Length: 369
Image (cartoon, rainbow, N blue to C red; front, top):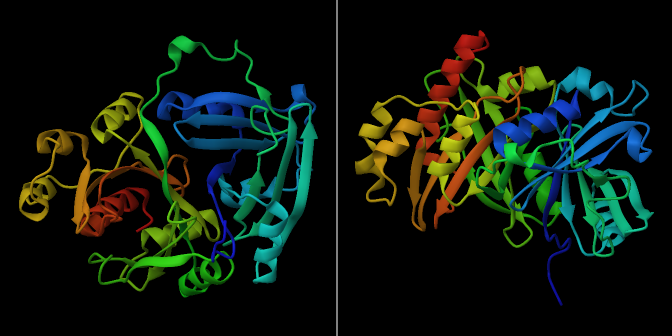
């Protein structure tokens, strides 16, 4: 099929996290967020340098990996960053062509096209560098019929009891947000446009996203015919340290700030997550008093939204509901957004001020504002 897209991307294949203890992280994401742990790689599968777990829920795939010793080439990133996103893998039809195109258009190549093969077929991947030491892998599994990739085997059925597994209704990745240094946002927008063939969807400046104390600027790029969306944030000048500056300080550089996970019923999903002890940011009660006038009529009960702390925004195409977790590690870095869209293509512009003030309350508690 003819296309003008210089680098055709099918979808986000998976997100790889590099963590200090993949076994414990898998337990957390299973029992807090409702992911099913489906595959494992490690010493028992003859993988000597790392352990990895594959988690699924809906169309979301997370891979949690940990080094098995200091000789692992990425072991130092745990000292620098703590737990975080290492790689956002993108499914493509032709890995060598995608890699060659990206490198020819200015990307830094990390791993050239590589074939991994076992009795289940062939898994193909290549990797380029993105912001900081975050990477994008191009992957193709059209000829692979195994559980995930060579080296991975189905999880031992005795590891987890089916009776303790409860999905929370998370269905897909809506977008993945990156934080970069002040003055670098436009350069990374240009990278995604020039190298990956993305287009800019929307932009927000410090007038859109600011409080009395702090501000940021953000631009959203999209590719894969709109299936892949990457907002990119940078700090703006403010009286105090913004959430982006706090992230850059504790992550020690640019990286993935949050992953937005889509649900078809945000009220039921958030109830399930709260029951699993997932912690969420809360906005002041006054936010909900002003909501009917700002948003108009919606299907959901406002009392339910207020009780759970769910935010609402509207644009020309409809409305959306969203809520943000607190950071999922001790460093105030990675967190998650839960989102439900009723036609809206918004990223919650009408909620920015209330959300920022809620984040600043948390920063004040941490002594990092």
